[in-house]
Amino acid sequence: MTGGLFSSLSMAVRSLDAQRVGIDVAGQNIANLNTEGYSRRRADYAEVVTAARGVEVTGIRAVRDMFLEARLRQEQPAEAREGAIASSLQVLETALAGTGRSLDAQLTAFFDSFAALAQDPTSMVARDAVVLQGGQLAAAFGGAADALDTTRRATDTDIRGGVEELNALTREIASINSAIGSAGDADTEGLRDRQLLAAQKLSRLMNVTVTQREDGGIDVAATGGRALVIGVNHYDVTVVNTPPQGLAALTLGDADITSQITSGSLGGWLHVRDTLIPDYESRLDSLAYSVATEVNTLHAAGTDLNGATGQNFFTPPAGVAGAAAALAVDPALAADPRKIAASQSGAAGDNEVAKAIAGLRDARVLNGGTTTLNESWAQLVYRVGSDSANATAAQAARGEVVSQIARLRDSVVGVSLDEEAASLMKFQRAYEANARFFSTVDQLLGTLLNMVGTL
Image (cartoon, rainbow, N blue to C red; front, side, top):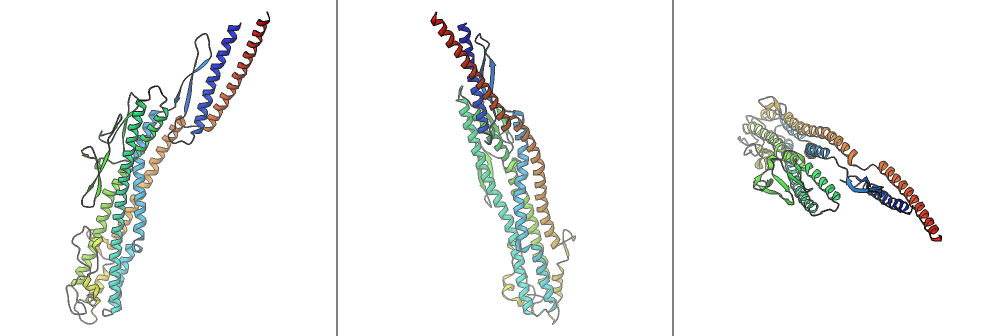
């Protein structure tokens, strides 16, 4: 009889310990409800198969779904790439729209000033207005070129910052791998939470391949299979400044991997910097070059108030590349508006050149005679807006896929406050029941010992 009571007492103790662990685990889950990367914990129980009977805790494990973790890493780079493109182009859109109150307005004002000069070719007031509008048009082109260059340099800064973050994450993963490998029998679930979170953050910067190691660590490789992390070793991506503008090229080991990074935030910033901005600059420079050459061709053939010919209105551009940033009114003409050629022959009242230059406003002089100067600017602005809108739409679409996978993963690994509260109550009730059972057995055992003692 006494042996049975002692056995029941021992069983109750084990059960109390088991329920206490359950309470601790539920409490830990609730405490980490909003902890980024935390995977909910579960206590594993098993029946005690010896004569002592009862239940015991065999371990505490984190609930994870490695398939969903891998799917999330696969989808995040594309969504992050479109987001990086969209955010960069949205800033550029705003800058171009505000440049000189929009370059198309400055083009119109410039040609209108020549139309006003045609009304009175000898008017110094009208000539001063032409010089003023020419300077403002050149400044508007320069402002647009500066906006493009600013966006390029901003994305280059983003790229450098992204590389710093990438290297910090690979160092963190290598450090975690080392800690897991040396942990022995200690609990490593917290380390694995940090490990997976770092891998997810890494996948938002660029597309990576993650391979699980037998020792609990992970290996990480970049596009093309180049190693970023192998066990406890990490390999930094290096930034190299390239001429002539000092933009960042990315190397891993002895290889230039800049062109291989096409996804993630780094891929998006590289696409803006190396593909989109050069295209926009080429279009803007072509427009500025056409404005300068078309106006100069007509103006140089005319006669100014001094009877001279051959005077350029704008400083002739050295070439198409850089024409927008370099556009300027010819210094000699700017200093003496009498050098503006309004007439063809120099005869009094002749306004043919002023009229011809004013007519460039509606002339189709670009793209094989199919596009006006204003239409060319509108096409450039439309291209920027279209690229921005497409990136925003693609980000939203890919973001929805990422969100759905994240929700599936969270349904497995995430902490549900309602579920944990129910578990906490269940373990508390079980603990209380076992405590009462323990108290009852203890009282019975005490009574029995007292009875034996009186015999």
